[in-house]
Length: 164
Image 1 (cartoon, helix red, strand yellow):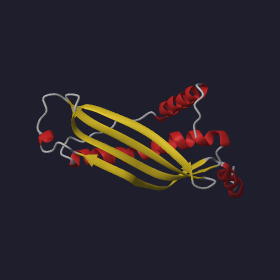
Image 2: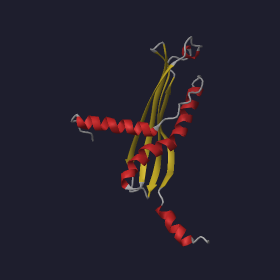
Image 3: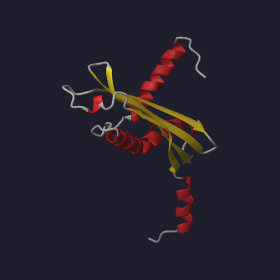
Image 4: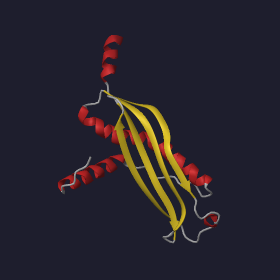
């Protein structure tokens, strides 16, 4: 059975597509406020805290800018900061042939999933360059994060809070 390029080409145009058009570090800071004292061997391991946030805005009919923000710190003794960082790593994505009710989940789950390995490496390199062992952030479940945020929004709206 021979393939018909005209038929296959028409089918390919209707397939859902997600393309990364650009990726970039939008904002980044790393602090080592107690150096060189903080670089000495610590009696106990640091407590690592991490916050993850995803934001998106539509740039054109099919193009979206997605921002993955990672904010974290390492403390010893609950109070002394070893290091702190804040990274906003962004990308511009083109979403085509995706049903309208599926665009939001694609943008808020799949796009940050594609950005995460690059943001993770930036954080690991910065922590290492700050004089500490590299911090390799565990993989993030963006589906669970999306569901958690959706539940929070429903709860807030049910309580009469208006979100804009």
